[in-house]
Image 1 (cartoon, helix red, strand yellow):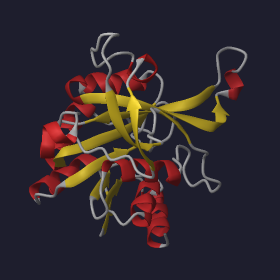
Image 2 (cartoon, rainbow, N blue to C red):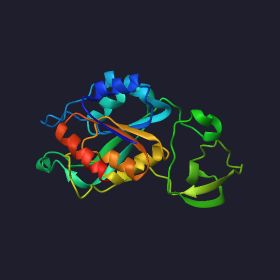
Image 3 (cartoon, one colour):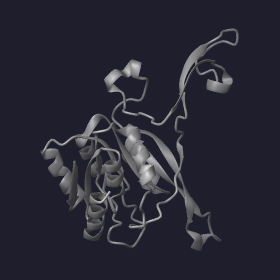
Length: 250
């Protein structure tokens, strides 16, 4: 199911709450307010965040792109539920015009928030924050725990021996390398492949993702590619039309 709304995200979110809509993840690239464009107006996060949790599954995540001084601003708006961040390393550089004055930029942050605790499934059961790494390599071998593996976080003495069963390898780190898409519809467009990684990691097939500032609709394309439901909101009429066309034809 794909639902697209042209309008103010705060109003549409209020309407969704009244309709008792629940989503499994919220993935969005909010405007930073650093570009003199009508679409780059900063969202009031203090006002918005409580509304997001009314829509979100108890074990779901809010995943927000950010950069520079905007990162701590978002983190501090909901420090209680902040979990961790990824660093997305791009294949392109920014701020070339200021290269003689400061370092060029080549990364963005991706902040992850959730009301649910992180931890092992066997301990937290169905209260655990949803996180499912995909496309792992199965190994199934017994391995000795040591400093090179865990830095003795298990609390064992040097005279003790501890072993664990390693079932898979290839788990993602918090540094992500994704190239920008060749076709550019929006100044801050994110790669569909990167969004597919986030959608797969934080939802199951058939789950629902909300992007309340969807821009040109890349999150919706990722959801359609992966058999997820998608709810997208966009205030700018031109980008709403672009997003609708891209998602319809994905």
